[in-house]
Image (cartoon, rainbow, N blue to C red):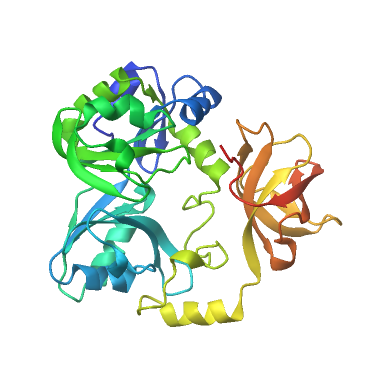
Length: 356
């Protein structure tokens, strides 16, 4: 089990630690609902240093990224980030990721912790264009400072105007007394804030100053309920090697302005249309939908299954995502979730669940 540079800090704070993606990670400190509400109403800080970072640079860096990623990274300018995914050759998804353009001919790819080795091998094996690639995952830490009070409470820690960093933009500069950190507005909670990328030996100083400035430590359990209230996909739950990006609603980051892995087959699939879609639903009665529960029609016939589900702390009702045939995918469609012996009625809704 790997540790982050802050593992002993979390343990000293009394966090409940669990294995996650091969790392010893804090799942909660004071309780999921309390931590969730802190991020929605104030400011919290997550240690997400388990995420992977690859540096791709050189005159052919963009060529490699364009080849392996679905989105059109040629649109990026320095200081901007882009959501994308790595398509596989069978119509599924190797991983989803964020691409940061650090300089001309220098990009940072941020990938999911559970897929670091898989993604690294996938990209390396396709690097026939001579790009320089380095895996920085072991050397870098990542903090997510999230919530509506993130900017005002952290502004004194940086000479940069934090409020001026727009969504999916970033700056490289000073933060909490450390120079040359990436301050990026690419959150996963839907409540504003930013992320800090720094070296492992710098993160403790940054964490301490962020907590001193008013951010409460938040665990991964609340991170999951927060992202689900926004309807953000989680790799391994809602998307994986077998799910089509068009089924998952990722057509918006699939750009056929260039050739990329499996692009011809994906373009054909877009033309034909898909038979099932990822939907968002709310339970009409009490109950908690969980991953793996069956989605059934009015006659009790299985039509899909829940990929992510929880009791929404902000809405006070059961919410979830899952794949169903297209005929059941329209907003306001009626479905049922099989919770033990009861088929609980549910309604297909438009995302996000939580409007803020």
